[in-house]
Amino acid sequence: MQTLRLSSGHEMPTVGLGTWQAKPEEMEAAVLAALNSGYRHIDTAFNYKNEDAIGKSLKKWFERGGKREDLFITSKLPNYGNRPSDVERFAKMSLEKLGLEYLDMYLIHMPFAFLLNETDMSPAVHENGGDFMLDTSSNPVAVWKEMEKLVEKGYAKSIGLSNFNESQILEIINISNIKPSNLQVELHAYHQQKPLREFCKSHNIAVTAYSPIGSPGAKEHFQQKYNYSPEKFPDLLGHPLVKEIADKYRKSPAQVLLRHLVQEDIIVIPKSSNPERIKSNIDIFNFNLTDEDLQRLDNLDRGSKGRIFTFLFFQGVENHPYYPFRSEI
Ligand SMILES: NC(=O)c1ccc[n+]([C@@H]2O[C@H](COP(=O)([O-])OP(=O)(O)OC[C@H]3O[C@@H](n4cnc5c(N)ncnc54)[C@H](OP(=O)(O)O)[C@@H]3O)[C@@H](O)[C@H]2O)c1
Image 1 (cartoon, rainbow, N blue to C red):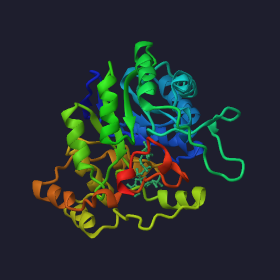
Image 2: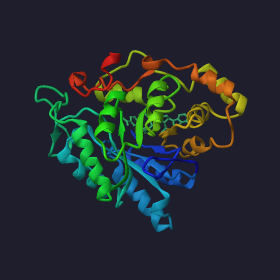
Image 3: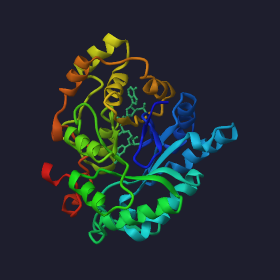
């Protein structure tokens, strides 16, 4: 398994299994299919509500002789736990569900925060409607100081950020004793994040691409869960250029999209619950895209117009002082 060395000194596999929207009942088989196909990196989050199911699969794998030190497990502090007093207890809840003693990576999921409904550990909602209640009292700098304590106490090997913009990352870097070693952001052929990638490189932060094949399932999810329809939704898998390059290398469009990123030193975490697709999504190390093909894929970038995850489906989130994409809306 190809890895990247993080500034924390740990190795992070460049392909991981994404698990957002994977139903708990599908999760057990998906994780085992992934481990059997050579995955050693799994990306989850408290908010995905599947850590219990992942824990069950990991337990089975350990019982069959799998070793904890061979795995790289990422989880994330939810936006409704985004305050200093909640960091350790959410990390411990994730650990308990996963059945692990430490996480390899713990990320602050989003820079903005919602109030917490303590009864079911979910975002608190306004009484008159379904909107989440913003918590504007917390700030990521104070949260980061608690993230550092997780490393000191042995609950996380490495810590990082997700969905932060450049100035928000800099704010953390400037006050940190332990620098963020990983940034997880939306990144795919239509939204390539070139300036942010340069910035991360200059600060030795490894970049993980979420939605690396364009998150084909997200549109339906946004519509069903939030009644939110983005104006345009990408179909990267069906893009003629991606299909042409896939034919040329006798690979699938998804493999080309993933290879494009990995070849440019980006970590990818494609989600699938289908054993065949899980297997094929990691089968990307036996071909090289030429410089010309990399350039043609680079040219698909639509900059901020290619972003799918604006988080505007959380109504009013743009009013939070730490909403990261204000300059784009
Ligand atoms: N930090 C964050 O805020 C954040 C946000 C979004 C996502 N993430 C993480 O990143 C992971 C990946 O992102 P994502 O789930 O949004 O999108 P994605 O990985 O780009 O796409 C997943 C979708 O593509 C389908 N798919 C997977 N492999 C395929 C293939 N080879 N051919 C055709 N279709 C394929 C999957 O369906 P099947 O399951 O049916 O195969 C699923 O609907 C997430 O699962 C999560 O772990 C993080």
